[in-house]
Length: 91
Image (tube, rainbow, N blue to C red):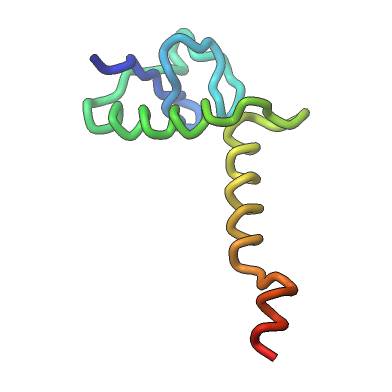
C-alpha cells in the first residue's frame, strides 16, 4: 500500500498527506495550494519523504528540507576533504 502524497503547489515539494504544512517551504497544504500527483510523482515523493523523515530534529529557523540538505552537504564535504592521516600517507 502506498502512502498518499500531497505536492505543494507553491514550491512543488511532495509531502506525506498527513502533514498540514510543506516540509520545504512551510506553507499550508490545504485548499488550492496542494494537489495530488500522478503515480510516478508519488513514488518520487515517497523517497523524498523518507529522506526528510530521517531528519529527527531540524535546526531552528530551518525546514526539514534545509536541514537534510545541510547534513548531506556537510557529509559530502567531509568525505571529499582528506583527513590528516590521509595527508601523511601521501607525503
